[in-house]
Amino acid sequence: MSSSLKNLSDFSHTTIPNGGDFKFAIVVAEWNAEITGKLYKGAFDTLIKHGVKEQNILSYPVPGSYELTAAADIVLSNNATIDAVICLGCVIQGETRHFDFICNAVANGLANVGLKHNKTIVFGVLTTDNQEQALARAGGKHGNKGDEAAITALKMAHLSANLPK
Ligand SMILES: Nc1c(NC[C@H](O)[C@H](O)[C@H](O)CO)[nH]c(=O)[nH]c1=O
Ligand SMILES: CC(=O)[C@@H](O)COP(=O)(O)O
Image 1: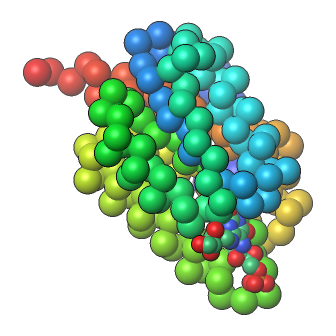
Image 2: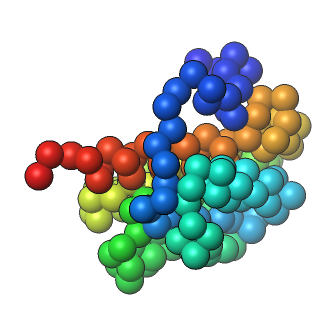
């Protein structure tokens, strides 16, 4: 479903678990900081809104979306108490095929990091044709993908914590 048909911040129809017992890392790319800063605020504020303690939100900036994979791996390798890692970035098509290589590397890399550590890695990366599309998904008419990423992390942390032992 296109984001134009679903607001990324509308979760009124779902049950959101309380995050009081969970610890999250947010890894955020500095490329397109005007966009990623909005994604970060959306994710951070959503976690706090749903009961996550501020001291349990660990934030890590990285240069670009390509570095999200390495950062998620490093963070989980050094802190086993993290319940899920939210990875935020914004990749905007330029003149060359660099866009394709980054998007594919990050999507596949983050999936592999999650499997390696048996932890949820949330793919909160915008991959857009232009800045207008990115702004629309970073607090604009289509909501905020950072909100969506935080809700995803809460739901997956709750799932992991409540599996039968
Ligand atoms: N063009 C974008 C990039 N490019 C930078 C890469 O992510 C990476 O930092 C570099 O190739 C060095 O390894 N990154 C974004 O996040 N968004 C872009 O639009
Ligand atoms: C996604 C990118 O790396 C891209 O923005 C860089 O632009 P270009 O393809 O024109 O070098």
